[in-house]
Length: 79
Image 1: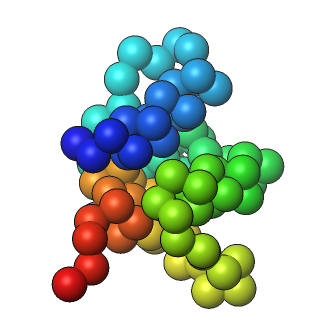
Image 2 (image 1 turned 90 degrees about the vertical axis):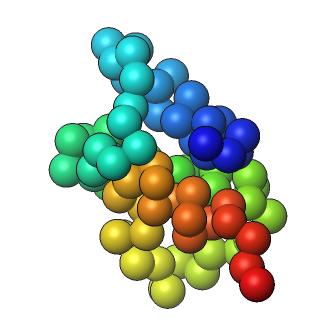
Image 3 (image 1 turned 60 degrees about the horizontal axis):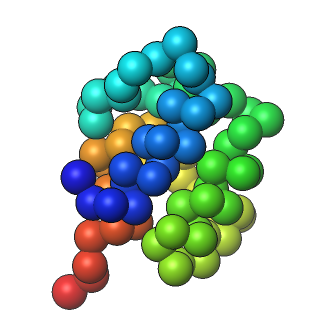
């Protein structure tokens, strides 16, 4: 797991102290680890860690559902 994805995971775990781990394939939204109130903050965190701008009008929620997809979409070098 990319170090920045670990930081994303730690951010989520900090908000859900009852959880010990988050499997890479767990749907973060369906399991209410990311809700509508925290989603914008979550996107901003990923922007900061990846160094990539994520225009809110172009956000695809499916890109943020699973840690494995977040890693592939935002933390894997393009090219």
